[in-house]
Amino acid sequence: MTFNSIQVAVVGSESVGKTSLISTFVLSRFVEDVPTLLEKQKISLSDLPENKDLLIVDTNLKDRESFDQKIKSSDIVCILYLAGDLDSLNSVLEFWLPLIQEYDQNLPICIVGTKEDLDHESSTVSTKPKIENELQSLLDQIHSKFEKVEMCVTCSAKNPTSVKNAFYLIQNSFLYPRFPIYDYKAQELKSKCIKILTEIYQKYDQKNKNVLNKKEFNLLQKKIFEKTFQPNEYEGIIQIIQNGTTDGVNNNSITLEGWLYLCKFYLQHGYSRLVWKVIRSFEFNNNLKKIVSKSIPKIKINVDETIEFTERVINFLKGKFQKFDNDNDGLLSKKEFDNLFFQSGGHPWKNNWADNLEITKNNFLPLNSFLAQFEVSLLIDQKTTLETIFKMGYSGEINEMYRIINYQKLIKKNKNKNKNQNNTSKSEFTKNVIVGYVFGKTGCGKSTLLHGLTNKQFSSKSIDPKKDNFFANKIVVNNKQKTLILFECADQEKVLQSKKIMKKCDIVCLLFEKNNNDSIEYLQNLLTKFQFFSPLVLIENNINSNEIEKEKSSKSLDIVNRFNLQPPLQFSLAKLQNSRFEIYQNIASIALNPLDYFFKKKASSSKICLTAGSIVLVGTAIAFSVMLYKKKKQRIQ
Image 1 (cartoon, rainbow, N blue to C red):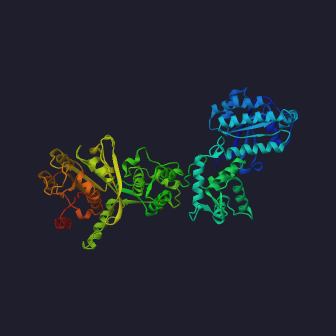
Image 2: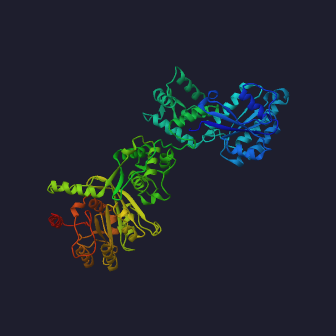
Image 3: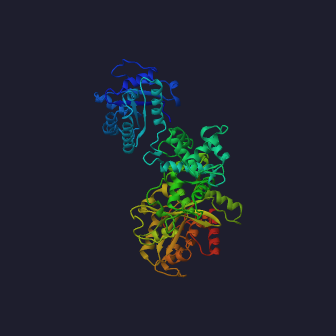
């Protein structure tokens, strides 16, 4: 916590002893004659634990403007009533608690019974048990209706020690509130608290035997309290657990049930400070969300650059996935997925994010889709993605989490490398994430191509044609796993006009329907009108064919010849079903080996302007590819 003081507003009906209570605490002695209302009192750091100043404000409801201001500026409210007085306690339930919640429903509240010395003097042996039962019933109603009530205690202004103890508990109620972690009505830990404590326990279960032995529990003790056990201290903890539960100890080791019972025991006996010490030691805040300990700077990515994770982060994400894959089936169920992201406060993605990934029929998430989603997220929102990974427990340096890749520099580097090798071997880009954009006339099969990447059948209801859509998956190219992300743009011409977008693209896919003149002419118009900076591949959709025909349509040959392109890749729904990843492996392979298809346009072909990494297409014959490559090389020289 970053604050240095805690403001407590003391409220209550007339004659409950608000001013006397504050006076006794400040002076450490009882004074008979006190003013009607005290000014704000400050207790110095040396007088209180936790190195926090306590600012105590006296209130009077008759001065409503001042009362409102004091409540709104306070961190916690202390409501006083006359100890042993049923009417006084009932006024807390019926009037004061509803009033305070009108200001702020999240404001923590403590209830203090005053003048307990008078309570003892006025009660008789016959009436005391009945009154105590009725008082307890009222207190139970208060806790049941108002979860923000942290504690109820009694004291007497004539007993400075009891007053100091009351304010100590008030301070602790603010610093270590029970409400977020403990359900008073059910007398149980809350589910969020259980998940955090379970995760902490599992982190120190080094042998994965679902028990913590003395050595492991001692490491946990040292992490939390920065000291190891004193003699017989561990044995004392074992005894507490054994007294409260039958399944808490196994062969002198503490089970998960025992660990959770121990934390509940501390809360029930007024030691919420110990449980919060555990939680905060592992960097969770008061809302039980993981604290990002490192500030994520803005990452500068130039127009012609992209970003991707380093191997260290990928291995971390794989490890997290495997840790929460409880049944080791290579999939995350919804429960496993929620548990994985619990400590980070939930996943950072929008609704329906899994629609763009490959998932099972039971909506279970495979590892490849889990990793692909993170890689897409990094491209879109670096700050949120890196923060999420830190919240998940990553402990490395920020600059070791990602690398910036300049596509054009990679092209030049590989070009020079291949020259030095005299073209005896092919050099592949050191790139793990491939971003492709798919363009084509409406109805040519773009959405079918994208859905096939995640093994999903296209449905007009599955995407919004007015929005840009993407699909992502892991594929294997030359025995190496890569992530392929294909985008379909709602406004294709707007995207093609944007150098900022197109220079980040690794490959452009131009899709057309076989024997459809309008579909082919649409692409001819794009090739004539726009500038391309990336490898370009034609894809012919045999949309009405069950088998791919070997002969090419005359129209497709026209576009190949006119723009000096290579013959198109072949694509059909039947081909997706028979060899699903072949088309996507070919797309990725071209993006990773663009120099094999590095051509300039024919001088008379069109107005199209191509640059160093421009039009490249798939060739089906190796000899034909080599011949064209040598021609291009001679032109450059």
